[in-house]
Image 1 (cartoon, rainbow, N blue to C red):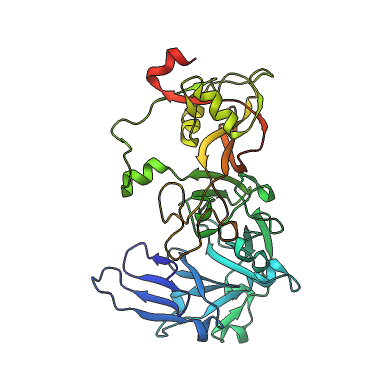
Image 2 (image 1 turned 30 degrees about the vertical axis):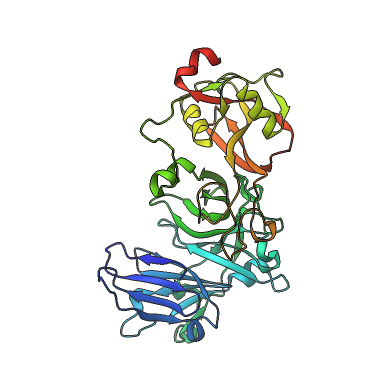
Length: 386
């Protein structure tokens, strides 16, 4: 089982099954009857279905297979169990005829863009480490404008007028975690994608980065909402963390203070952590920096790099805390062949105060870079720490 798409009125749902195809059912039933909507062998040319989403006000079902996207017109379903579909051969369009085949993950169509599909995937040449993960824009006009009458009578319709462009990520580089614009951004293992209603923002669950990635479809700008350990424990238990009083933090130095040569120092993650500990403080979490940035008021061109307390270790969100090897499994953070990150990688944030923007990237924590030693602590330490 891969992904589930539910109609907005809650009357029907679709489930992507990598081994069988796509099932449909009524989610209101306590024990729903599953009906095979589209077969892997018959309708998807033997390719597994990795994602499914509804579009065009639930009139279209987008099914993502390993190498292609199938756009099923649900309004034309009639009495047929499986309606006709337009096939977009994304692997060939985006990878080229001589490039390695692609492994696609999911596809969405924006509410206000009826002519494009946004697909996330990577070249199979990247191997298990998913090298070359990127978000692509596919020109996807309606089937009636892109196919002949003869082709429209077939079960599958191949769109001849499609084209491909990279929105964010770089198909030619290894995986990573870096916010930025266009090809400067890095992803690891996005699985599911959706869009914020009424906007051009794509939302990806980048599970190996333990983060939600936000991609602006028009500009290619990428930002992150990182995994929060305290939030995990609040939702799922497994820790002693006290959530009754959310931490109120102070920062040293204040983000609104323009950086000077004296305040910027070449430090590794351990150096920055020690600097904060000497003041009775700690490195800030990304959420702390966002809260401080919202309160900072300055017109100076303040832009600084900051080591954060957030680690980049990954375990597919199966377990909280530092990832441990699962019984009988190998996909954990300390085996690089099977995971994007290990425990020696941390988040470094690039903070732009006037632009109210934070861009994050995962960097080996021994890397020494010019950063500002921004520290956080309880509000009771305000006077003694500054």
